[in-house]
Length: 492
Ligand code: UDP
Image 1 (cartoon, helix red, strand yellow):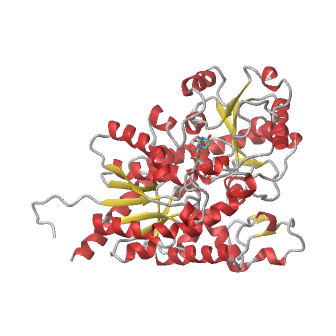
Image 2 (cartoon, rainbow, N blue to C red):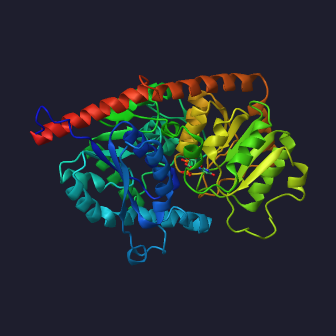
Image 3 (cartoon, rainbow, N blue to C red):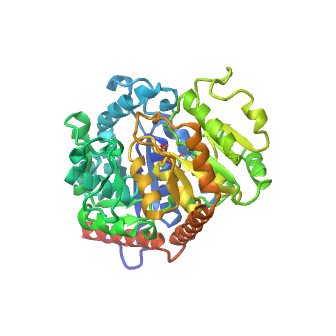
């Protein structure tokens, strides 16, 4: 026990993300946020992903010389585990054929248990006060329990989608409809939310993946609680529902992206950006406020050439200025089959294509950006919310259709491009007319103004929530107090 003259020992938290950008980026933000509040943060990650963390951690340390943040590297022998070499590298999925992504990711889910011994060794050596581990590491709950360390689950999504999952697993309403495209109201969930079976991801499959998901749910029940990248004002009914019916404890500490305040921090998220950030901002500076639409589909989804051509044609027909992020790794240096003939000449000055990785948060936060076409990955959605932007929703896979319903049916800050079902990570097919209409409807008209007003209001609330005294700031304070109490009881 600390004597009365001794200062209380600093809290120490381990952060352990799954090896995908959508999980590592918010975890890095979380580790920085905790470090900025006086907690010692240690990020655990496998070798190939170290560069994603190293530079941002250095930048953060230079700005916050008193903050304690570090990285511990784990070994993950892919080939020994029957996985392709380097598949634990977040960039691996970039080079994978789209149809192979799902099987590889699933195998990765089942194989990460290999890391359990290394995690236990680290916990035993450093005795952290808490382990924040990704939802996809269900075995982490047992590993930390062995040493009396509380484990928090990080889902990386919102309350709303967790509540949708819960209600659908419980009531299986998708089994009672005549066809998979017939809309139904999700039972028991507040808000009369409408969805179709084609958009549901919780199908209780009786296979290895089904077993894995059951392990994930069970480990959540046995863990200390859940950490959420959201803020209370965004989805109060679903936060309450989740706390009442699903998890025993949860803390909202988002939007995590808002912990990046300066230019360098905002530009250094994920991969090295594929353009000159300064040039990109200069281009935006030359545009009117709220006039540019930004299109990005996250770090995994990859569209076919035919789909990309439709997007190009729809954008051009809409007449709006745009920044469009295109993830194509197979076209490098060759004729770009996915661009309509003469597209870039015709849209010169009006549009910018970023081939590869964009400084997303910098672009979203610029005053010239007035709309976001998003695949509804949760990080992107929340970054769009924090920037006060209305959105065109274009879900592709996973829980993205659920996130879409939050935007279109609850927050009413967006409209759907009309995707009906999920097909691998390549998406269904959306024609140019729908792209053109969605962009026009988002950017101009009375309904557009109303959506923009609501979006700006939410953006103000988002920024307020992370300021001193805001809901997310206070929730992190209360978590810190809880962890201190837990430690004191353990040490008694
Ligand atoms: N991102 C980025 N530049 C890009 C593409 C993505 O900075 O060109 C970031 C984006 O800001 C977000 C994350 O990568 O933080 C993607 O996570 P999300 O949950 O939106 O989608 P996922 O990649 O998991 O499908």
